[in-house]
Amino acid sequence: MGIKSFQGKRDTSQTNKAEEQILVSDYMTTKLITFKPEDSLDDVIALLIKHHISGGPVVNDKNELIGIISETDCIKHISESKYYNMPSDINNTVGNNMATEVDTIDKNMNIFDAAFKFLASRRRRFPVVDEHGVLLGQLSQKDVLKAALKVKGNTW
Image (cartoon, rainbow, N blue to C red; front, top):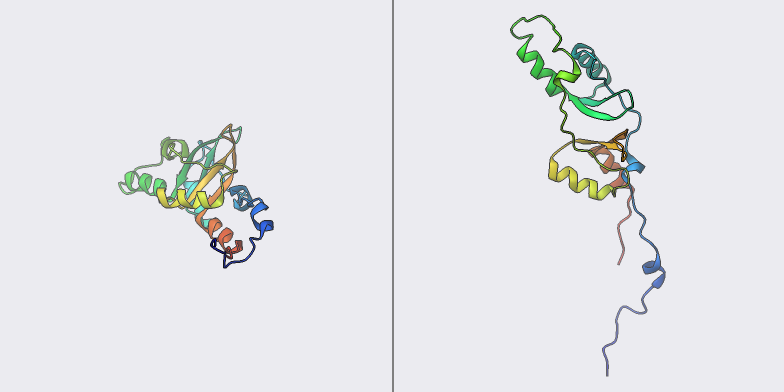
């Protein structure tokens, strides 16, 4: 006599259902404060404080991502110039102080794959760009948490 299943007949309606992907584009922020390379760091500092943000993407005239400017970048400049009472100069621009090596994320990535990327990189946010480097938005760790709250757990 063969082994009988104690679980009963398998519900095929669940297995045939395509898994819904939760994408980065569903949760990314699209209204961003961006900066230009020619902006002064004094203006950047004022905007960071005013909007309670820790940094922002730097874009060119075509809205292509070219870097990131952060509080840390601004503090580095302050420690090198204002600490020694040096006057503001041509180095007081975003373009001269921004980080140009920027990790980005694709809008079509699964939100939970993005979560693993956050864990591996120890970053707090990723700019989202298209295939041409045009800035589309930004995904933060908080956005991943919002997505996790909306996901219902699997039942067996």
